[in-house]
Length: 294
Image (cartoon, rainbow, N blue to C red; front, top):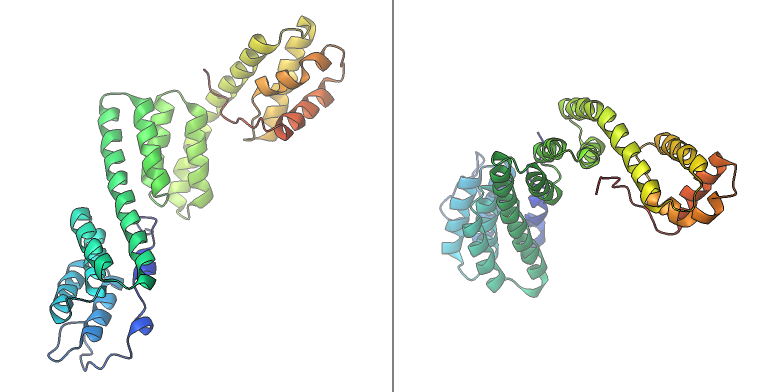
């Protein structure tokens, strides 16, 4: 399975070559503290442990480095990184702020980015908790919104995106559910996830067709004054056909009516009219794809 959270934290692990020469330790087994290790050598071992996902060991090693040079920023930074990976966000923030106090100007952006990632992860967990509580209370629309916000923060968390799609479906917001599923499909490399998304999209297809057509009719009913009644039904059908031909790029029929209302009265070429109206709607910036009942 891919990395759990979108910030690739290995980017924040300073490469050894950036600030220290080759390590002089004579320890060739798994990294551990040796008598006579310098601060730089200990930090190298901390980095190795982090890359091996041995977060508690890396934290303990980084704390040993602090005792060797409490005025240096690297050990505090790596303590914060280890605690972040363990989801101990309060400790992670504390160590990162200690690192920021000691870091040279050239390294402060790195640590500020880490603090932003900690904030995002804290928000992610809060959104998940809110979403779960709302789902239990069957407030599916609000639950979906919270799950989707969490997923947008960390798109690699595809299970959270899937949960958002499920909630949108239960809330009757089928286009929103389909949008999330299509986004997951566009990024996933997991065959099981792809299969699940395609299966749900298939389940949604008939509901989407009905909802889009109802919305098209509603748009013409509300804003179609001036279009002859004989044209109205035909225009609805042609619009619906054009929307289906275009796939997911739905154009809000209300945009087309606003632009083409007067011309439609005397235009008998319905196919050309719909295509032209769609083009004009896009050019005018009217690119709504929501197509959701109001």
